[in-house]
Image 1 (cartoon, rainbow, N blue to C red):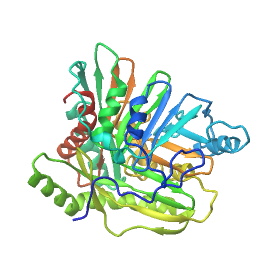
Image 2: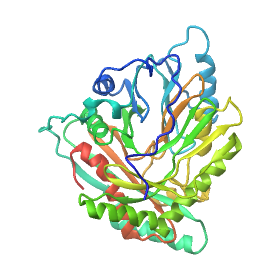
Image 3: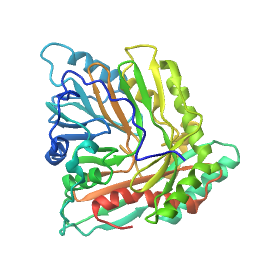
Length: 411
């Protein structure tokens, strides 16, 4: 059994000229956690990955919403960033699940960079307990029994041969008497899984997307790309023996291995046209977060065209069957029929890209959208012909735990 503390890490991205990091220069402890502590909602965009910590402040240029694909819009902006006197040569933000929805991408006024949070010894220090957390009212949308009915209906259609897989999500609507402390939530998320992808970015007027995803959609470093699809999950256990049994069972689960293979095949198909070489391991490994085990495959490749950017690759991959299903358009229609809410930024992507085309884009799962005194939490499960309503409902409940821990609420 191959285990990793988190999603397998690819080689560190080349440091862009605007970054202040140097592998030859020691960095004082606390550099990364200082950026985490400095985050402020509304104006800031925070992203921590296994390779760097980024805090972007203000907006110099917002990416407009029009009919062009995201890659074309951003390439136009990045061309402008290469001109003399341009602001920070990086785009940061999120793109939604729906292809026709507005992006939330911007060129910031200033960017601060630091090494990864996982390398900062201060991230492991105990955090004082917040005794004044709000009391949350929690509403499940849809109710668990309705979600189970949607899963059963999808399974029946798959067994009839209509499609192969769909990812069905549900939400928790949380409300409290006062606006939540988003910086405190972000700190708790980051400290719970410092080796993962923690983010907080504006997702629309008055809204903030905040979360801690385990899944890298794609990263580009010069001529090399890395993708790390996750599909097939099992909840962690506080009992060590049971936790190991769950991990072993996941590695041997025919249902989960099939679900994972569908996703990896789609990733291979989407990336192959961009690559001179593409390496796809035959079998998945296991990665773990604080709440879940996941089947994981790390895909690497060499680009055929040096002009292909990270966002070009991310746009070609999105949405993978890990967040939508297959065939894609049929799965989108089933999602629209089955989910009584708008996904918004959930199962979209969040990340950054510089003027050279290097960057990291992460799948926006284990997340919530905050607006005023309300939070909407999201969790989904991959439904295949072997799925059961009980198992998929339990999986979404387990996935909610990541954010409920940060919020201080229970389901």
